[in-house]
Length: 219
Ligand code: TMP
Image (cartoon, rainbow, N blue to C red; front, side):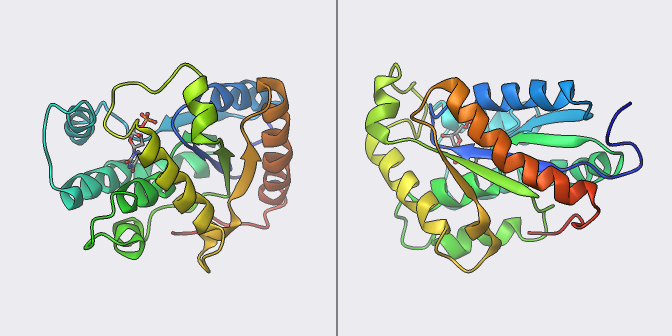
């Protein structure tokens, strides 16, 4: 019997630096929760399949140049395209596991040090999106990330950029928004160890949602 019948699903977000193992861990978590009887849907941002997603993809591959604000708003629009689907899917009882969300949106744009693109400015277009029940941040030192086979060729996959992104991610823990509730997991350990930590963090949340103690909030 699916555990989620008659109750809403949980909205779980996995965040982290490039090469921190988000995709692997999101897949493992998906398998684990599915085997426990949860109905699961997965999602990732950017979603490169939509027309906006294709513009983002072209930017990330350096095929198109864009003003920092423009690409930022496209990343946000790419989440808004899915907002209604997220809400409806949770209400239908599916737990959603999402690879990156607006936390990436804020920090990657703010890491560019564009004087007219502050963290607050970057957060604004995402206000009103469905709020995750739990966000796990996979933390990895950029040196360690490089050892894992190096970065790819995409726009932000440079060590200095990753360093700034990491500082901004960790800085969110000290803000007074709900971004401060992000759970940090050291992604430098083995795949199994990291997976175990993620499950610990997620299970607390699943319990709260199952007890009906948490409604779907807004960012
Ligand atoms: P991906 O490698 O997870 O597909 O993400 C592509 C890049 O886009 C990655 O370097 C992080 C960056 N990014 C943003 O700059 N803003 C966003 O809103 C999101 C979701 C990702």
